[in-house]
Image (cartoon, rainbow, N blue to C red; front, side, top):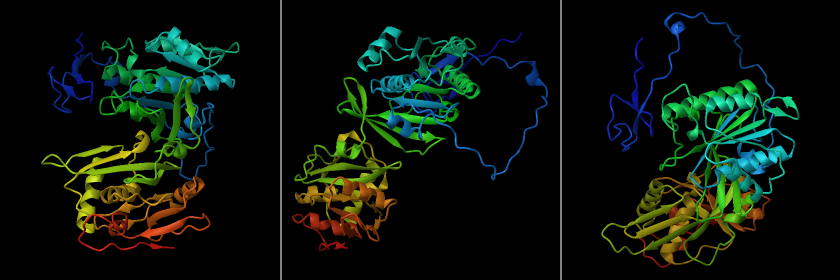
Length: 471
């Protein structure tokens, strides 16, 4: 009988190597290559041709009813999932250590069980006593939530298949596994947390979800780069990938969908970390703007959009004289490359002369923004910091800046302006052609970055300022 060969696999990127080495040639990671046993043999049937079964082909005209939803009772969580959990779906939730992933999942399952649902929470990292202590802090002690502590996949599946609810043997409505990196299967010789174990355990749990109709939530760790640890095949297997984000120095957390087969992507849910768990934030714009000082130069309010939700946040910029030969750039919550482009456009198209100074830019509250519509707000904050004059009070900005210095329109301008009007803002600097009536907002059209020079009266510039037109 031939001996099963082992392989050397990088635990960061999944690349295979013929032998062990200290550095992975694919991703450059150090001490990430470990030896793993070969996958179990499929059997003699793999060596011969197997006759398949015919299946029915359909066309695009076939109409299917929308998938049913299981509502957990946590509105922000259900919102990000697309309106609730779909039976038979698998969801992967990732986030930094200590950010509150276990708290979020335990709270969602507890509320689902409180409303009469059958939920099972299986922890591979904590004992059940520790989970009970967390549940007591969130007032979930009397909730009929089933708990378990196990790491073997076969034991978990056997327990779930024999689970009973109100005296009847039926699969749970929601199952949470915390975390997928702690699971192992006896079919492999590799250690828990390796690429092979994570991939095999995820496949078995996703297959259980599809066959039983239970919604399975997998909690995953992230690497230092912010990516979910393990093979990328896990993210392809599941139906939705959610990231739980936030800064340790801030009390709010953001749940963001980056993949969702049953709902919109880039949707967010905002929570506030309290002593009794996570509290939903119904109006995140008010939270991010709660401590805003409108009299300080270098601050602008951006009317953004996260998924389908309008969101207002503050952009803070500081331009200072450099003490070194190379100017410093420090960015928190925004793309560094995008900031470099805005600085170059302000110098080339508006003559601001800012590229030789130290520039610091921060998204208040620790929020992360990737939307190009933030360009105009960032540029206005930079120009305001250079001139030392605060921007107009109760004013929002949005618009994309091109390399020519022109301001390009952005989608869903009406939703952004409605959110600004709801929070009491009176004026908006918008791209040319933005027409929204009946909101009580004064719209000031901005055609190029040169129009922003009215906010920087003191610094010298190569061309005169042009007053933006308003309608």
